[in-house]
Amino acid sequence: RKEVEQDPGPFNVPEGATVAFNCTYSNSASQSFFWYRQDCRKEPKLLMSVYSSGNEDGRFTAQLNRASQYISLLIRDSKLSDSATYLCVVNKAAGNKLTFGGGTRVLVKP
Amino acid sequence: NAGVTQTPKFRILKIGQSMTLQCTQDMNHNYMYWYRQDPGMGLKLIYYSVGAGITDKGEVPNGYNVSRSTTEDFPLRLELAAPSQTSVYFCASSYSRGPLGQYGYTFGSGTRLTVV
Image (tube, rainbow over all chains, first blue to last red; front, top):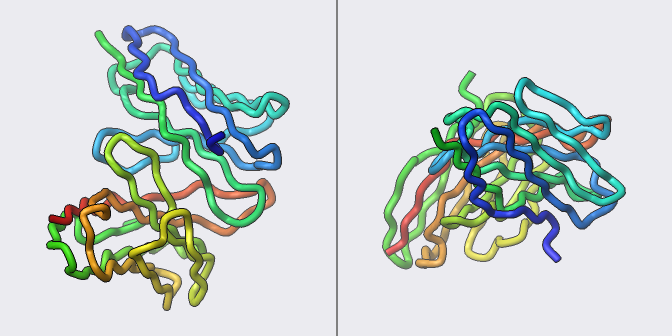
């Protein structure tokens, strides 16, 4: 089993709709969780950290479910500019390294 | 504030040639990392460093070397380039672990390397 697994998509989303997708992680001792956004041929950029209580940043909401070992990202009122690959990122229990999932591709269409 | 700067942005190497990918950060981050990303794939950790003078291997270190003589710089060396090293290379940095665990990374804009 991969350490961090994501549905590669693509998720085809009409503009203005809501889309949500999950990421599962294998290490129950992981402490730090992030969502990164990566545009085509660009570097990954931190979208948001994911906290135990869940957190919201504008149209984006992230949730953490420790019992089932997954995190989720929900995008409301999707914009064309939300089209990107969303990377789920989890730390290893020990050490100082983050593990990246393969990414979920989202395509927002008019 | 430049963040993480990588040079060069593009490079074509012939098989067997050597090169150094440069990475500099100006955020006083202790931790620095090198990743490679193959087309349509996720990021794989090559090497990382938790401070000047300290480096360690990641998942895919073979064919690469690193050094960390200063907090700011973390160059990646390819000694004998092979076609399998054709990839996009990203350097990243972060602060040390905090009370809530790991901090997120700041990435450089990448180096696109082709080995022919």
